[in-house]
Length: 209
Image (cartoon, rainbow, N blue to C red; front, side):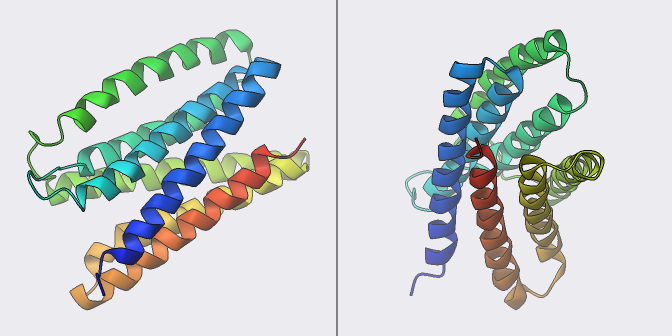
């Protein structure tokens, strides 16, 4: 059995569910014109592309694709814009943030398209990016938890649950490099499964009318 089979299936699942959330967010944005929904959609599109790139790199053997740069930076930036969208509610701020999000998305296509020319990611850089991504997701979790405790709604509850699973996912991903090699596969797969669960909960959140 191919040891990459389960991780690849999880990558595909992660990419497809994140893509569904992006499409759903854009669809609602087209009706309500809420910039925060656009930011969520574009961020999830970035997450979807990062998982798809990770999946593609595991099967392309002609030339090594160092997509870890795009995976870590893309997801960190995507979640950062979600966090920033929660900082303020004024439409002017959110519209400016939306434009900045579009610019960041375009710029992040550079490391994706140039992945064959990039060097392998340095373990220290990978650790810093993984810590940053974990910290950002944790702050989003705290934000939605605070919102739920001050004004309980189903949306904030589902978002809180989704980012709880994302926090666990990225925590497991971060710690897998500090356990014996034989245990890294268990940590990696466990983190991927938790991440997919988080996305499923996020689908429920954006599907609430």
